[in-house]
Amino acid sequence: MLSRKLFQKPRNDLEQYERALKEPDPSVPDEMCLSCPQCRSILFVSELSEQLGVCPKCGHLFRMNARQRLGMIADEGSFLEHDSSLHAHNALDFPGYDSKLHHAALASKEQEGVICGECTIGGFVCCLFVMEPNFMMGSMGSAVGEKITRLFEFATEQHLPVVGYTVSGGARMQEGILSLMQMAKTSGAVKRHSDAGNLYLTVLTDPTTGGVIASPFVQMSQQFQKNANLIWYEIYGIVKDNCTEPVGDDLNDAMERLLRSRKG
Image (cartoon, rainbow, N blue to C red; front, side, top):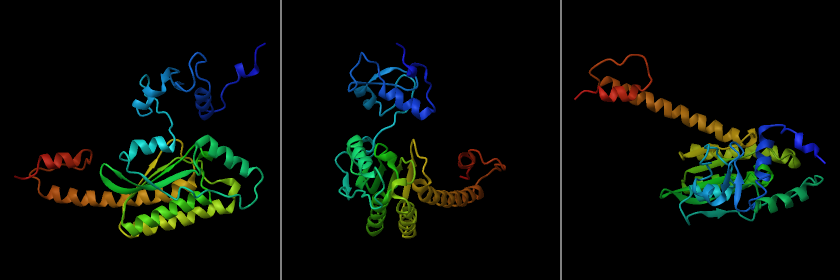
């Protein structure tokens, strides 16, 4: 007898992606292979790991968990995790939340939706946080906000840069107003870190849909970009004053053309 699901189309791209990962070729063991959701090729897990999560057939970028991303970013053996035991509690007695936390911990093998710590990247010491998409979609709860805030406070005290990888669906609705309060707390910590003259970089990865996670970091990144643009124009003016021929008003590749025509 034919199943109704045989003719059921995915409701959206995300569902189609999840279905492709959950329904690999039945002739191949699950732990050995994955099916690419874009080209449907069967790939060995070891091969995909060597390609850093990029399908060698079509170039599709596979999603990865926090530990996999840490292994790609931090220098080998350099990562020291902070506040690993800090995790959420059902402070509002939200129905079913305890069960969701339990299953999220089993699915992700993590205690919370973010991993924070310090490491070296290319030999440079920095602080690093990476969201865990398999723990309730990396949603911002009170524990997640507290871990990120503590990391920024530590980075401010130690005068260290911060690199953050956001993978989040936004606020954790099971914590209500406690979740929304984390936006103010993390934004304040980021602002104090920036005011102290420290650098931080934010990498928005797929999928990041939550304003509660993204907005404080994006806002600070935009300010950093504005400052970088101001510095660029100052350098542009200095180089332009030392050129032997006019460049015009077209700023595309302007710096390269200016340097090629500089005096002397």
